[in-house]
Image (tube, rainbow, N blue to C red; front, side):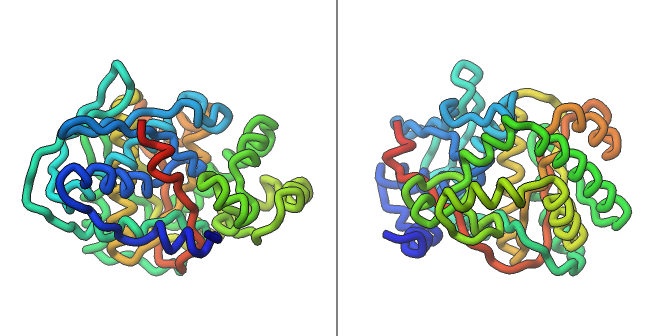
Length: 335
């Protein structure tokens, strides 16, 4: 299949099946979740009435994510999709973080199938790295997003004040300057970019060039273009426009800085993004201020969080649909 065929095959609702066949079906939905650099750092194990979501440490990104925070947040994103799809399939899941595996065990029991608005939005959610239209959100939209983004030990802060948005943009710019100056970070990012449709289909992971606003080109040409056009200055101009065009900036933050809360933060983000998609809104990460360790405490103080860790930063607004990333097949993630 070519890229277009793969996108049509993946980003749609699938048959949930019956009996034990429901478990691989809901895991398919779990794999449609967000993950850092679209690394998809998860593995799934099916047992009787149970699904394990386990970290795949072979897909770490030590330059951008040295403590694996984003990796475990990605597990939380997959967990939320799994639970939403489970309810639609008549399986109510009870998740529990397991310190011995640093994964999540989900026990399922039979229930009446319910297809929630968030489940219906799973194929619609995407990370939209484009300008939005700046239109303010309604009170009802803000209330729904706030409710979706709250979790166990995780809270949500929404910023719509123009002056504060501009300050967020300054933190993003500072993060860009630090990251672009890091040779290891740049090399790691390049390793996860799939410059052409052929690369995207062949790997089914990583960041497809057009998803990031670049044309589909051979890898050698993409690397050459990055050599001459890849800079903090250019990225800052783009990020400033994108942030100013957003309706709100959402910051998810945790009460405790540990893997269990990182997973919960990812789960809250995914629920927030699904609720946004259900409302016809777009979302995109602007995580630079939380990814650079020396900037993160200052960013937390600006937000009034004290010692609490800001986990994820997301801009939300109205915007166009963008090209989509692909996902690895089930056989690659089932163990």
